[in-house]
Length: 204
Ligand code: 3PG
Image 1 (cartoon, helix red, strand yellow):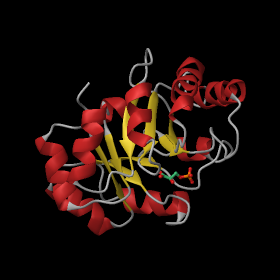
Image 2: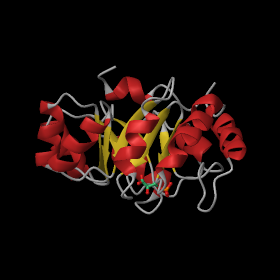
Image 3: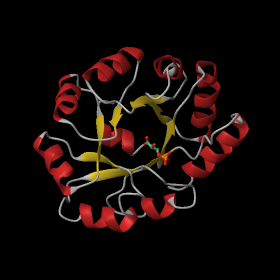
Image 4: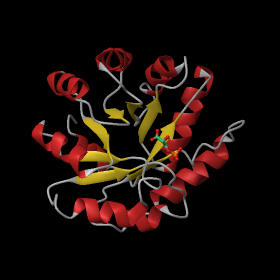
């Protein structure tokens, strides 16, 4: 599955996971996968992130990617850790060229028409729309997507269980990302699994 489009179509929601304690990696991934969300984005925002990716990648059915990938050094580190796709908050040419050279499915963040056009120049047409709510919400994405009929998006940033259905109803949206499945504080894996099941049901 070396194709970001295919990964985006697996489930309606990609949980965005910032995990400080690698001991939580396995039970968290198992809760999300068993709830119906196999595609997981682990952000590089904690010292434990690479260990979390490696551990989650061994969970049956999990398709684990890395988020907050900022440069080629991050890219090499997360691929070595076992990441199967790469997400970045923005689009830079050095990272995009490195991801393409490594054949890593890549979902760069965009928020403007210029971002999208730079992505198209690099051969990319699947993007994270980030930060989705702060960048103007659904009306902004609809307007932005209109000239770029070949592009599809994963809006992320400020999306909740309540607003996800309206985002998923947009033609240009293949899936949404969000951290709402793992609220800050001690994790309740039963609650995470229930939230995952509700999220999975957002697209039949
Ligand atoms: C991300 O890195 O994609 C976002 O921080 C996730 O956004 P959220 O926490 O608002 O869901």
